[in-house]
Length: 211
Image (cartoon, rainbow, N blue to C red):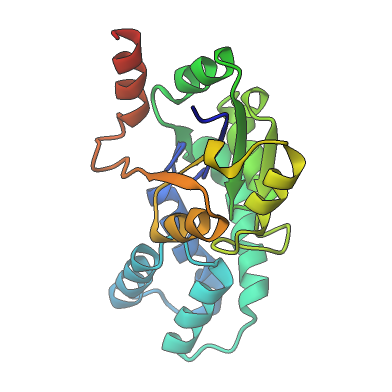
């Protein structure tokens, strides 16, 4: 039985894909004389194909494409400010997620979040969904200086608890999450919430409720 369950946030717990993509596009508005349909289409496609990748690398790639001289690290900070300003209204958690966490805590599981999202917007999303209380550890891998798929944050959790790696499970939604858990040597489940019509947690709670 797994004793420590670790979750990604975006598109694993929260329905954030469309919001995140829009904030990515909006971050470029001050850097461009005009945002053409072609420009926007490129940015949206880039955001889609690089899901889970470190944000500064995605910004760097777009800046090169548009031949814009700007600091991608600064743009990451500007993107985070947009997220902090709008995340509480723009991001909701998937139906059934809270019931799933309640069930896990009732079974005395340790719950953690390891995400590349920064602490500012991360806190706003969890507070808005009233989910912070379910997690024993809430970690921004990017703010800790070890973005996924660097396994550092999981390895630090393993050091914190006297639990073998065989009793850990990571829930994520991307290739980056696959690599993150694999690099740390723990089991994982990669969920496509959109393929599951955003009903994964509701389905799993109902499944166990009827066993």
